[in-house]
Length: 319
Length: 192
Image (tube, rainbow over all chains, first blue to last red; front, top):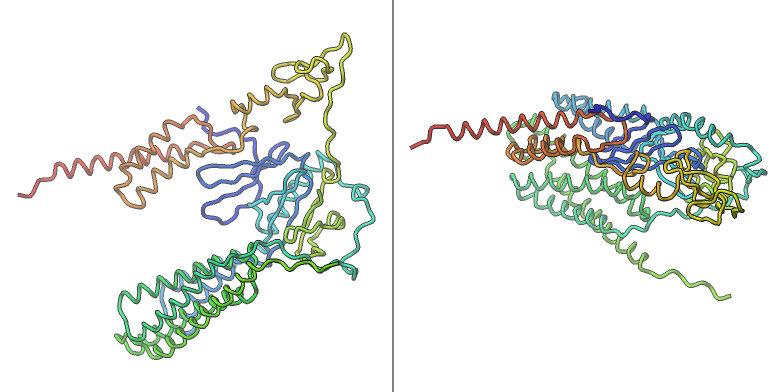
């Protein structure tokens, strides 16, 4: 019985933080193996060193987008203890955990996407998401590819070079090749915002467990859909106004939840046993108004965007 | 095939290939670092065409009119330049390559493998962690998969059989616990 499989491959650095997919890169004697694993099955792609034409690293952001989320959560969880003297072990420990995560993400540095190109394909290497790791992998791969293909010399580049970057004759930017956004996800978010507005209105007169459950359900739905849409914006073309609206919705959701929790906590400390804290009504009124405006504006914008998608392209001018 | 920008897909100019640091794409401004290799500048590989054989020369097994240039490393048949397939630094005839691929001789032909050990471990753990009673199905399934696929080819990457072992131990433990529970319930004195 063989306890361990044959060790033909050496693992290269790079391990993305994903729950269900686990991409990795492995080095063999004459090829690079890209493995895409969904925990229960693995798909392999082999790139032989003699076929590799280019490796492209695209620097995408100065820090991982997770920094903003974990940083905001750390701030929300630590602020009550720091500024309002609400000492709670759960808040301190969870806030500290998110702070550590934020620092770890900052420490990992800028993010990137990495592509490997051969004569017949150009594939993304999913395991390389940080510049530092991608450069490290490149330093490992380059000598091996050079060993097979030989070094790149200037004659191959068919010099003279293209004009330098400072040249004024640089062509204008090309349009991005994002897919047009159909908008149903945005419609869902704006519907939830309107629902939140209605919920805030009902909250003025109705209280109880059902309202509490509805509050949490709407809040979680809002956050999940906003995060999902923010991620989706990277691949789909959306007008700037809608993108801004989604970010405003995120800020409003986080701000109102935070304000409501802080005000209610302070109210409970001042007047224990009182369910209606000071500022409850004004907060709900502002909440109702802002979500109604955001939801309505969102629906108007997404309808306009849909119309532009349906509009046929303008005819060319007659010669 | 030029190297396109990862964001706007515009072809990147040649000076990217000699820069040792990320540079902005002239079209969209995205920062890009490119390592190009000689294969990028090599033209398409010439198509192998077997040369005609003359009298007294060894001819190709598949094309008797063509001169043999190599032999298949597996079956030893003579092959012309057209029939020779170079793979893993060896010469293959098409039929050997096809049969090796079909019989999965060697991991180099495969591009997908099922991780039965992870599946068995999932059956052994998730039903138990989620709710206790679903493991009455999960544990036998985990045990069956572990035993049935103990010798099945797993990942081509370095991997031990520890998942199979843990799955078997967990499944057996759950079955024993389940049996003890059922026995206890059956033996409990009934209320009048």
